[in-house]
Structure formats: C-alpha cells, structure tokens
Image (cartoon, rainbow, N blue to C red; front, side, top):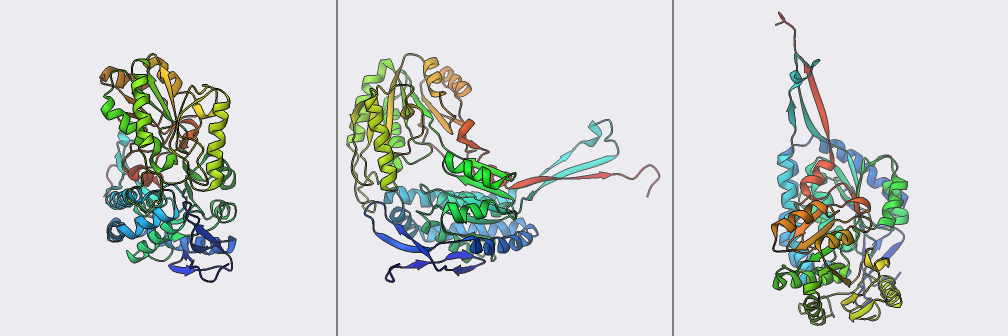
Length: 483
C-alpha cells in the first residue's frame, strides 16, 4: 500500500480505528486514488456491535428531546460543511458537482425531518370496553426502539441514503452501525464524524468500512443486530436475507418503473422531466427513467425532443459545474451496460442516439424497437440507457408498464384527471407520479416498491416507524368497592 496516500480509519465506539489492511477509494472518472480506508474484518465488526449494544441500551432511556437535538445539530453541521461534503460525493462517486450539491442539501433536509420525527413519535389509546371481555380495562400503546440497526448503503447516494438510515434510527432511540458501499465510503465516514461532533454518544453512530462479503456479512449475520436496513441491488438482497435469517428487515431494491406520456400531455413539461430522469446520475438510480411509453399520436415529436435533449448533455470532469453527466461507477459496470445495449441491438433494437463510450464513460443512450421480451425492456439496467416504445391506449401502456418484477415508482403525463386516477389505480408500483417522471422524490414520502422492488418503506417517518415497534400496556381496573 503506498505510504503517500491518506489512510482513513473507521468510526467505532467514538474512536478512529485502523486495520493492518486498507483498500483504495478511486475516483471513477479519472482513476485517481483519493484515499485508503481501513478494511474491516470480523473483529472490528464485533467491536462495533459490542459498542452498539451498550449505546442502544442507553439510547432507550434517552428523551425524545435529546435525540432530536443530536440529529438537528448534525443537520446544521451538514449545512455548515455543504461544499466540502458535495466535493466528497462528486469525487468518490458518480455524481457531478451540481448533483452532489443537491444531494448535500437533501441530506440536511432528511436530518431535519428526522429531528422532528423524534419529537413526534408516539402511540395511541385503545377502547377496551369495545370488546366483550375488555370491560374494566384501559390500554395504550407506545413505540419503542428495536435496538441495534445494521445499515447497508449503496454507492449512488453515498451521503443522503446514509442519512436516511442514521436519522430515523436515532429518532427512534436506536444505535446504528453503517456499512457503506466499499467504493464510496468517504461521505459516510464524514457524516459519522459530524454526528460525533453533534453530540452523539460513543457507539450510537458507527461506520464500518470494508467489503460486503466480509464486513457486511459479519454485520447482518450477528445475533446482536435487531434490524437490517438495506438499499441496493436484488442479488445482494438475497444474500443478506440468507445471512440475516429471521431478523426485522427493510429493503429498497429498485427495479424498472415506466413513465407514460399520453397524447394530451404537456410536452414542454414532460420531455425535460423525462430527459432529466433518464440521465441524472448517469442512470444509476433506482428511480431512473428507463422505460418511456409514448402514445402513438405524439411519439415522433417526443422522440425527436428526447434525442435533442440527450445530445445537448455535456460529459466530462464531475467537478466542473458545466458538466451534466458523470461516469459509471467502474469499468465493469460500464461494460455490463454496453453489453446489454449491444445485445438489444442484435435482437432488433434501434439506436436513436448514444453509443458504447469508453472506460467508465458512456453517452446518454436512447433505444426504440426493443423487443418486449428483451431484459433491457423491463429489467433495471443501472446506466444511462432509456427505451422508448409506442402505445396506442392507456390500457396498453399500463399493461406494458406492469410487466416485470415490480417498481418503486411509475409515472404518467396526462391532462386528464380521469386518466390520472385510472393510472394510479392500475399501475403496480409503490408510488405513481402524475405529470412528473419516476425520478421525482421528496425525502418525507413513503418510499419503496412492490414485488421484487423492495420490502417496507423508507422516507423519514416510515423508516422511524420501521425502526421501532409497538408496545402495549393494558390495565385491569380495580373492582367495585376498591379504594
């Protein structure tokens, strides 16, 4: 390992912990080694879990006000360090500096929402006398923390998706151990440091860096972990479920939702939204606009506009504010996307714009005439590739959109309330976005998908509830004549 490079330790029990081995963090745009980070093994994971168990025990007795103050202060520190955090996101990952700045702003908002949720989390009373055997009793329930949360986060939103784990975990009174994606750990480490600066006690927030195969499996498989919160791909989700066993688990897995553009859509609004959702973060986004189903009456117009929009995007240095689209996360990912496009073309797809690119760079790519049975037509590609397809009716569009393994979001552009409500009822997705693309999200929404696109919901309120559980108290009142 080069001695000239920075070596960053993990955050365990409030301390920086290094290991005898380290792994490089590489800028996917130019291959620069940004730093080396400690490579955790089972011993480091065990140390983090021991600290988390003790911290969770203390957190259970903390007040809602104390929890809220820690998370709110962390939000303020994110805002105070906004530009340096954005540059970290852009350097280690796939986002341009403009995209990274938006992510940093969203992170601060996510944490503010979590601070509010800490004060809001409550319970309900029950009318026991509504039941035959409930007379003479009163009952209520509260929400209590699950304990230790293991959070596994992806590379595409390396700061805000970590905040979506840490903020709700603390709001609910838990301790959390984060295992960030091995290619983008720097943002998570910095956020962990800001939580310590904000007053989080040792062990409450910890960041363990390393591989999924070693550190990740040791973490999710540990008996001390009460809940696993995962955002990432379906193959990893299967491994996590197998290793974790019968633990409380939430998973946000993506898949490929569809965006429908009807003949009564406002194209001045629809096309820019579709183009943005198609090529933001170079398509490496679980809300990526990968499938665009366009009514035949406006198909040629929409395609022409989308090609123009794609051709206008500038690729290049992520830290240059003029750059519109960054790279894929590594050359293996880029080659996988190129191979998928080449295979689709071999089976009859037509390339409207784009092409193979080189290294980790791939231009915005539009395809049509993709066979419905081809995986590019319905499986998540996680790259800057979008398929456009003609449809004759909304019924046909919904049927095509629902083919696959579920979706987080589907979307429809229409000027008709009747059509909009029909789409909301019929589209098989966790959310249906009307007159915006599948890529629309605010951080308070219930966020998650149907079928193979996930289990449970993220979004601050919903994640906080998932990281707590109801506890019932039932009192049998004294009988007649008792004092």
